[in-house]
Each structure stands twice: as C-alpha cells, then as structure tokens.
Length: 122
Image 1: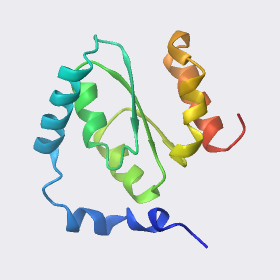
Image 2 (image 1 turned 90 degrees about the horizontal axis):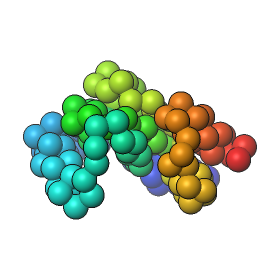
Image 3 (image 1 turned 120 degrees about the vertical axis):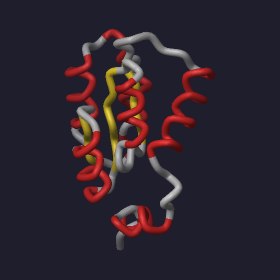
C-alpha cells in the first residue's frame, strides 16, 4: 500500500494552495537567509523541494542548490523553473547522507550521493 504523501503532492496541490507562489518563496527564503546566512556558491539542500519555488530563489541569491522530492509531478514543475540538480526519492533516506558531513565534497559528488540515497544504494 502506498503512503498518503506518495499520492497527495501532485498537480492538485497547486490548485489547493495557489498562495504558495514566487512571492511567498521570496519571503520564506529571506527568512531562512536571516536565520542561516550563506555566501555565494554555498550549497543548499532543498529537501521536499516540490515545484522548485524555493530552489529557484536560493539560486537567484547565489546558492548552489540540490532539490530532493518524492513527487514526479512536482519535480516536472521544478525542472521548468530551476537549474538545480533535482533528485527523486524519499527524504527519509537522505538523512544519513547529510549526517556524513559532505561539506568537503563538490556539488556534483553531493548530488551523486543524494541519487544513491534515493536508490537506497548508500
């Protein structure tokens, strides 16, 4: 049996939450930046990235972004708005990758590790 979250975040989500738009993403990312500032080129993991609103804003502000989401429908939308590396998978599997302290790896290596985690090959 599939989990509720595997089915819920499809195209219907956008109809139910139209206020979650680019303006909302700008406000959220500004709040994140005040709480956890980053420099140009720093890596940001957008976990449960959805349609890529936040990933696009993080990119606009100079971050290198990797997006991770379970929903194919959301990732299709994200591909249309961001150049971030996007990985499909269950976010429960990515926690070990983050715990392993990947700050020293380059962005491409980090994305490969996320892809491995999504495929449960870590």
